[in-house]
Image (cartoon, rainbow, N blue to C red; front, side, top):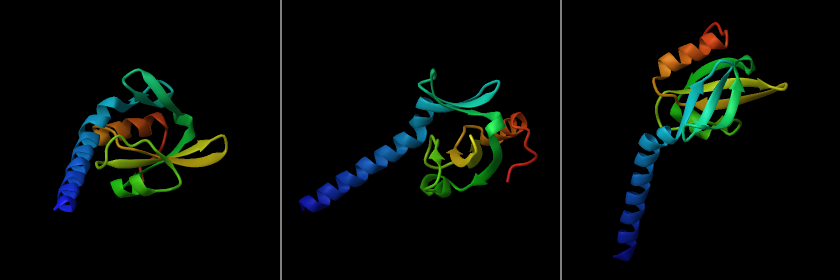
Length: 122
């Protein structure tokens, strides 16, 4: 009987974690479009990562699963599911990818596309 109780406790804990991550983490970690860069911001004032627009060479829409489990990229996702985009980044000659899941994704990505002078979103 204790195995069943432990299993139930485990699934309740995982469920709580998933809900908290999906709905609260985006208020802790978010994206800001600045004059010359896309910034990943923690607690509204600590810039954790800055990606200059000139370094972004392609924006690609992907599934959340691809965003979470791709093994050759940065994961900047701030939720488990939602509209996910890969940013293909040329940083000092190295091609890298970063996944983002912004609020108001269509508007955010369109504005990012314009600032990066990209023709389209793949």
